[in-house]
Image 1 (cartoon, rainbow, N blue to C red):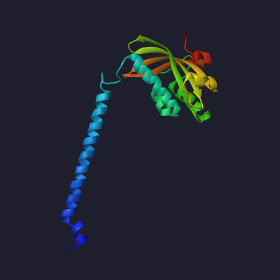
Image 2: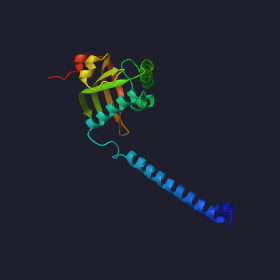
Image 3: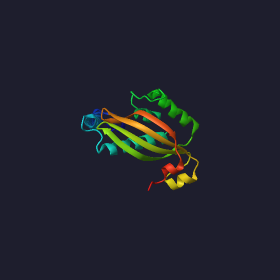
Image 4: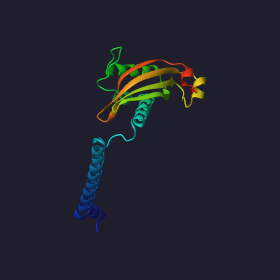
Length: 184
């Protein structure tokens, strides 16, 4: 038997077609499964779980992660299209502020602390977050005291839109190191 004929013959080609067909079917099943998960997560009542406070803590953590990764897309996703503040900044303006900070700093490490959380309505909250921004990792308040860091106090108004908490208004000012210390 000729070896070349056996691997290029009709029987071998049928095996390849069968294998290829099974592979496509498996890919289609996986894609359908992932699409189903996406649809279920997008359905009302199937979005973020937990209390509003837990959801807002996740919002703050997502902002921290996006900033540390210098991810403008991630920052943009956290801001409502209806954002507006006293300085007449829009969502695009806020993203530009973040981009400017990213350009000025090669490394961004944050330490965040939610100072106050007030649920105004089921879908609206006021949050005060203290943020230390440094070029080196800031894991605790103790390490913060030894580092040169930019310290800010963010007063934010969040609103739940399409089952996601988004920033609709913010005001920030410089904070002091003692603001990060526990209050007794």
